[in-house]
Image (cartoon, rainbow, N blue to C red; front, top):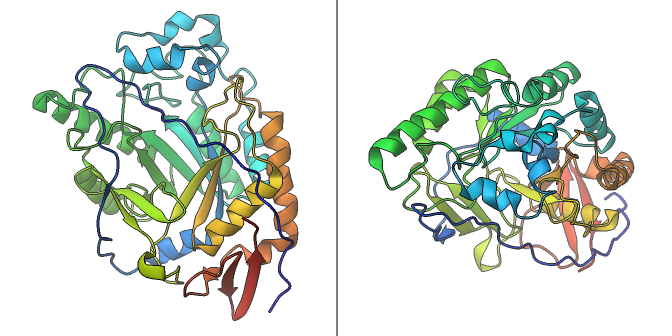
Length: 384
């Protein structure tokens, strides 16, 4: 048995606030509906490969990096369908003025991250790529650049698996009207068209990361079954993260079912624990409390806390997708940079017990997580 890495005490963090924008005609979300775990088919080689990666970079960046710096504007932009980003004037024109995709991938590599997910379009509907079906994009408005192209090409050049994040919600689209059947059918067609654009134009994609945000429930019948079938038929090596895994907590999983409903179930009921053949899972986290760069948010997690969370996620058999939000200019936030580099320093010494591992199996032991690889057992000790 190898020597366990040092122990780290996590820094206490406040609970994240709810992030919901109300609007007439948009029914409130009931939240996650919990029930029994669904039946899973056998794991594919692609899913097993994904489970080996363990640590990825999530990048939330785009128009929202401007909005979060102006009090109340993010709420207004998501709530008011008539809000126009061109009202930002020079701020929109300057979006990405110092954008450097190479610097982003450099940081991911130094941090020991094995894949990169980037927001192609977030909930407000402004796309970071040259979309033929969505005129609200960074090529036709403001900066005139295809940022997804820059990041995807750099990832492909460097051998970094690339994930395209796409919000299932588009708060400014005229057909995002979940209570009107004809409008909703048109909106679902629009969604699928965007997925085709990303998969065909920016691939190969490791995965599509599909996010309903806070707008989900019986009224929001996102066409997940249709999307999943189309991806499987046309791009069989592209994982669809509405089903293959989902953003979830440490002890339960939430996922989008084939009707677009958010379902959840306990991962290890009745005292059981993670096993080596479990379905893939991924825990998404932020370095502070915000997904996009938010100047007012200074509640950053320290490096020992982030190491502790990485170890716990890996011990549970999952991947840790850690987000950072670059500035509106595209520059990396220095507060994020040094923390990610600190994670990379730790992984260069202890990564053998992280990458490619699987849980030993059985109920977890308080204060430690045991994983295995190639007949070797690695014990990671953590502090509550």
